[in-house]
Every structure is written in structure tokens, then in C-alpha cells.
Image (tube, rainbow, N blue to C red):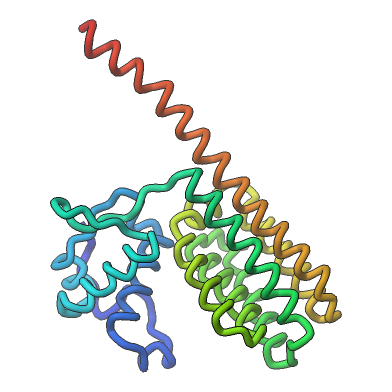
Length: 247
């Protein structure tokens, strides 16, 4: 059961206070996924979430419909909402599409970067490095997403940026599965450092190349993990069946 909290489960930034309750609930549920409080397959009960987040059921219902539309949650007409399960096929689809669009956005953004954006990227990278040292996967993912959002938003292509951010939001479950793997946070941090260095030199080609490699490598780690899990489950299932037939 989700434990009740006083207000929201994480400190709300000043800018976030101006956003709608619905948007805040969406962010909180994503935060619960990143923090490991909600896992693939977990049921999402509207009344329980509303109580935990100290909001009415209506914004929770709206948030769950949004999460279902983006693929983070599923809606069964009989069982209700739940966190979507992970699959290697979906991971390949998500990450390969992300790689193509993020590479394009990076290539466009780099020549347009001003010192304000570069300063934000540096600060974000510092916070990400701190989370890596602390082994805090949830905080690391937060700053990882912030780094990407700031970079792609600088492309001044709102449609492209919205498409990418939607895909990144749909990838949250996979980010949670990926980063606890040994060396994953360190690899992501190293890639971000290289991307930032390329941005500072206005080397759009290098920044785009490393962005694609970074996304492709994350996909490979996730898919290997899911395929290994699937192999274990397939290997175990016949044994369970034989046991049931031959007590």
C-alpha cells in the first residue's frame, strides 16, 4: 500500500507550484516509479493515490489516463489502472525512436546554445555527479532527464522537443530498470560530460554522435536485462508445469 504523505512526496519547486494539480500528480507518480515505490505490474488505485498525495480523486484519474495514453500505465476495464510491464520489444521501439529524434535535436540545438543554457547544463551535470557518488538512482534520473530537457529545448523546435520529452516520459520505467545496473550511472555521466564538452566547443556533430551512442547503449543494457529475465521465466515455466502434472 502507498503510504499517506503530507502534501507531495518530494519538495515542490516554486515553478511547480504554478502548475496544475493534474500535472503535479503525473510528476509524483513518475517519481514513485523512479524511486521504486511503484513497480511494473503494480495496481494504481485512485482513492489510495489521492489519499497519499492529499488531492481529490479527479486529478488522479486524469493523471492515470495521461499515463495510460503515453504507455506508462495500462487500463483494464475490470481491474483498473496498473503500471505497464516492461518488454524488450517496447524498449527497442522507444529507444530507437528516441535516438533518431534526440540526435536531430542535439544537432540543431548546439549552434543555438547561449551561456545561460550552458551554465544550466553544467549545474545539472554537477548535481548528477553528486547523485552518482551517493548512489541515488532516483535523483540521478531526475537530473539526467533535466540535462536532456534543457539541451533539446534549446533547439527552438517545440514540436520536436515535445515528441522527445513524451518518449522520455514513456521510458521512465526502463530508466529505473537500467540505472541500478553496475556501471550504468557512471556510463551515463561520462556521456553527458562528453556531450557538454562538445556543446561548449560548438561541435554539433560530436554532440549528436555521442547522444546517439548514449541512447543506444542504454537500450542495449535494458534489452539484455529484459531478455535475460524472459529466458529465466521461460526456463522456469515448463518446470512448474511438469510439477503440476506430476505431483
